[in-house]
Image 1 (cartoon, rainbow, N blue to C red):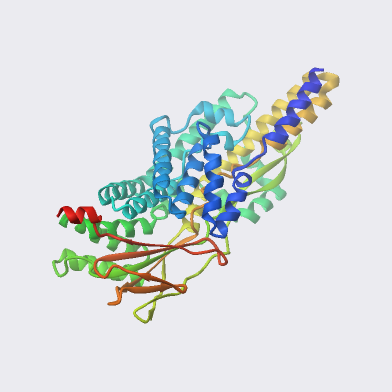
Image 2: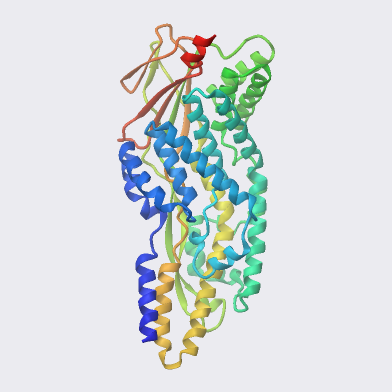
Length: 479
């Protein structure tokens, strides 16, 4: 009777415990890919309440913030992103890594640990929130958010290094608490099948020392689009000191792209002219921002591991490891015509590269945790089967079913982020007209305009907004 109960529990866990963030967001991503933001919002709004006070709350709030923003529900987007930010800060105020939580993950998997947000999540959260405030013409809050963004970018490298060091401590603590977990993971990589599979999906990067990788990736965490937005907002709404900081942001942004971007080089020159007193501001200019494509998806590949390499008599086990799949379905450009001139776009931020770099910095730690977790569970199964005597075969069946469910990779990632940010720049034409893919728009003739175009795929609909930095009408009336 007890063994039947064990088998029933194992089967139940296998059936109901296998959902991943990728499978849970499948319908949302289908609608999102086609630019059907209304359906995507309906689906995400139905799911977010179910995720409250769970380890997945942050990732779902981020998804909701991006989707509602694209669907032009700025108030809800602002609320969702604010909740996500506060939750992330709560995590950061706690111990950077909870040793007990990491140890528990050895019995299940990494996806059962609270999702606390990657550095690029925090940076993109601030970018979207800043854009929300700019669209609402709450420029003071936009400046506060953009300064928070700069701080997040400045701290990204140190935060990741500390996270990896704390994770290493947690692993050591977990191994200390489990007397049977003293395995040499490096032995696993000597197996030809294991090394071949790892190389297929990761190249040589799974072997990298994460600390060394961080030292080599100092600027990867910095999203140049965030620097550019910071510069435009401060230059358009700030005082003399704000404009000085804006000029510095433009210069840094141009240098980050090796001065290969005509748009950013132009902004850097304009910023220098403002600093030198040759210009008062950016003048009457229009930017077209293209937020195109979708960020990489996290998928998993299965690897059958001969755990006897780590410890004699351990069974082989199937484990899933995460990998990134970049999305090829995106618009390289859109048709943008102003004053009879076709605009050319420069790529100023490649989210594929930013996300990939942080993924590979975490990868050695993820692989080690996954291998040790699987080995610890297999060890527990081995000793349980021995203790069960004649019923050991049934225990092994139950244990195998449990491991099928428990060995999924952590596939949580902000799926509604874009693939790239591109920018074009033109002097605002006298007639104030611009055409984006046959859609005619009217611009404000003075000051700075941003035509914001979001496209998720080649066949999906464009979502277009026109943003300017003029004060609200009621504020003008007061003056």
